[in-house]
Each structure stands twice: as structure tokens, then as C-alpha cells.
Image 1 (cartoon, rainbow, N blue to C red):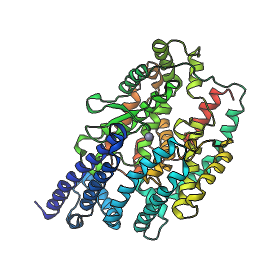
Image 2: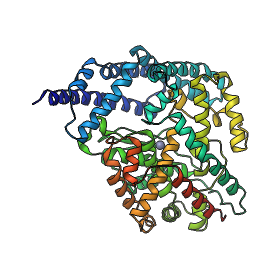
Image 3: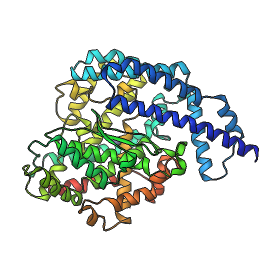
Image 4: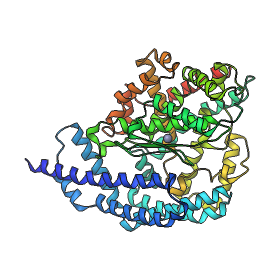
Length: 494
Ligand code: ZN
């Protein structure tokens, strides 16, 4: 055995234990959002902080530097493993251990304060801890950025290779077409009707389970619970999802479930050889979101699939004020300038993201003071959506992200939409008769294709290359905008 091989094997064995501990940390996070008693928050903050400390010590262990210097990748997979470990090591060694622990401790407390403030519409209760979180992330970003834009350093954590300027340029190109589509749709003579009635929680969960199964979720290696903000969690053989239930709005539950199944099946589909290695997880938040979005929107909200869902819902819930599958398709895709990002339709969704992107970029750069954030949010919302925010829980207190310190995360949602648009274009060419299966409630030809061209590869290639390899062309915003215009002009008779 050569020294290079020995170093590689030692590095991978060490890394495997780190990955296992990181999975445990993730499962604690899952527990915090689903099962943990409220009174345990302070203790959990300490537990999480301790575990993050252990993880940081392992990720910055000087032996990694030595192994990296000696190791050589024998094949494409080994080269990719080394690339990801080197990247993580370079980032981790730039950030002091006490700062990492402080970020874990403060963000854990901040999430509790945010939840309380949100339930009471109390912005002043949240701002001091938000200011603390921003200060800590600014410090971290400055340590990593090495003279570059500190916000880029934060984005890079979620979407390797992306930058604020490249994303800003894409958003600038998208905005006029989205605004024009929004105006046309809201001004259309034909407007789809909303759904009406009460939909029992148990029946919603039962149909959610069926939807998850149809989209390929593996119940042997997963489970479904409820949470305030639906999410998926874990990699390998334990990938859990959550959904939420609103009795008057069953779509909230159904499409949250389908969305999270997209995230979860991606993780579950990754080559088992990559388990508990850097390649054994989704490659970036943007690529992850492309899987959840294509499941939820391009497949789950398609005319063909909603035709099946209409029959399924009529069988389970009786009448709910919609008379035909065509009308139901309009109802599922109804466009409305609502306040809440997670409930936004496909036309408005990216406008929510662009607004958060501009605000958080200004916060991290120090161009916007926390004290001015609420006014900045409300002004921008009025300008972009034409309605006035009435309550902070429908405004800047609606999202958990900033309390968790997740600055730079929001733009990955729109990158995910862009990637989903590209994948959908390639998918329709690869599987021309897809609608026949979707009309029977069976998305498996699509999920099989995604598994083959993208999901099984995990972190093998960088994000944009992952999408390009799957699609056969370089990703840009064109296919998403074409899809949105064609779909919504059709529904609204424009
Ligand atoms: Zn998602």
C-alpha cells in the first residue's frame, strides 16, 4: 500500500466518524422541531453547542491537513471526496472554535425568541437577538471571505460556486418577466375559484401518505410528522419529513408533503457506497430545492397529476366547491399576492425571494440597520406586491431562517426553481408520454429519470455541473420563465 493510499484511507475513516456525528446533530435538530418539550430549549441549546464544538474540532483537526497533503484520489469518486473534504477543511479552519460554538448557542436561543415574538407579533422582542445573530455571522463571513464580499462567503456555504453578483444578475433578468406575468394574470377576466370546506386532519394525513408513496418515498427508511415549518432531515437510511395541517387548506399539507418527499427521495437515492462520506448528501441547497420543486410544481401541480388528485379528493372529502378537473387545475395553481412566502404561488414565489435577498445582503454588508428592517420590509413588500403588511407575523417575522443565522440561504430557493425549470425541460424530452402516467397519479417515470440522471450521484459533481450533466445543457433562467408563462397564460386564458 502506498503512502498516498494509506493517507486517503485514514482520512476517509476519520471523515466517516465525523459524518456519523453530524447525522446525530441533524437528528437532534429534527427532534427540536417535532418532539422536544418546550421547557427543554435552554438545555438543548447547550447540548447542540457541545456537539457543534466536537464537530468543529474534528473538522479542523490538523491531521486532516496532513492527510490531504499526502493523499491522492485514485479515481473520479476519490478525487471528488478529496475536493469536498479540502473545501470543508479550508472553511472550517478559518473560523475560530469559540465563534462556532457561540453561533450554535445564540441561534438555538434565537429560534425560541423568534417563535414567541412571531406568535405575539412582537418585533421589538426579536430584534436584539437578531442583531446578535447578524453580528456573529458577519464575523464568521469576514473570517472566511478573505477580502471578498462577506455575503458571498455565506452563500458559498449553501451553494458552492455561487456569488451575490451572479445571482443578482439572474434575478435582474427574471424580474421584469415575472412582474409582467403577475400583472397579466391578476388582471385577467377569468379567475380560478378558491377551495371551500373543512378537511379533517386525519384524512389529510392519509392522503399525504399516499402522495408520498406515489412519489417514491421509502417508508422503511423514513417517517412523516408535523412541524410548524415543514422540512426534511437526514441522509442515507434515515431521511425524515414533516408536513403541516390547515383544516381549511388541504393543499398546504399535500404540497408540503410532496415538496419534502422531493428532498427526501434525493437523499435516499444517493449511491449507498457514498453513505457517511462527503458525497453521500445532496450537493447544494439549490440542487436540493430543484428536486423538491420539480416534484411539487412541475409534476404535482401539472394538469395531468391534478386531474388524478381531483378524483382522489372528491372520493375522500366529498364536494368542495369545484366542479371539474379543469377548474381544479386552476384552483391548485391560483395566483394571489399573499404575504406568506411558503404559501406563495409559482408566479409570486421568486419575488418573495428577491426581496429577502436584497434585504439580507444589505444587513450583512451593514448597509441596513436592524432597527430599520421592519420599515424596509414593509416598504419593499408594498412596492413589489401592491399590498400593505398588517401584522409582523405576515411580514418579517414569518420565516425562521434569520433566527437560525441562515443568511445566504434564501436565494437557493430561486436557484432551485431555475434548476427545476431546466430539469423539467430535459425530462419532458426524455419521457414524452409522462402525462399518461401522471394522469393516473403515478410520477414514477419522472422520479426514475431524476434518480438516474441526478439523485444517485450525490455530491460527485459541483452544483451547476450536476444540473448540466443531468439536462445536457448549461442551466439558466430561460426554461423556468418559459414554463411559467406558458402554464399561467393557459390557466388564465391570456
Ligand atoms: Zn425545500
